Amino acid sequence: MNKSTIPKTDYSKIAEYYDRLRLVPTEELLSRIIEYGGIDRNSAVLDVGCGTGRITLPMRVLKSFMLFALEPSIDMLKQALAKDKPKPICWVRGDGQHLPFRKGFFDCVYMTSVIHHIENKNVALQDIHRVLKEGGNCVIMTYSHSGIRKQVINDFPRVTAIDSKRIPSVPHLKT
Image (cartoon, rainbow, N blue to C red; front, side, top):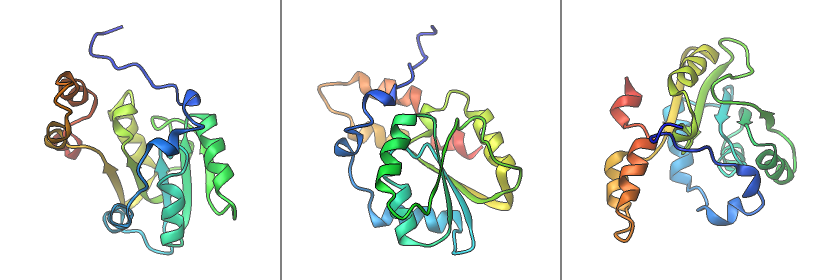
């Protein structure tokens, strides 16, 4: 294994308590995804790396549109499905690098704190482009390198270097 390669997290081991360790998404975060994604009531939207539905479920409550959620971990999907009482979301097990959807289907594809988990980002972004309608939007919410530096715990200075390698820079994502 290459030293710069970060091993994949096995989310099946943490699916049961994942939500308890994460902050509840703010309405501001959800509103920004809707705004940047150009999402309206007629939109078809995909959440890549939806996990337990922490972002997906409140998005559906905030605004009514056709919503799909993709996640590779079956255990994370089970947690999400258990919380989706009216079942209006289409939950799909799949990989962000090989989207199981037809060309030009979505108005918006978004991911939140996921891009650093995707092994081949170029392949994933090309596939996102494939499933987006012409004029569709891709919204990637991630940490900036300056944000990482600001949030580093002083007792763990190597965290900055590790996260800066894992998380692509904003200029890199824009290209």
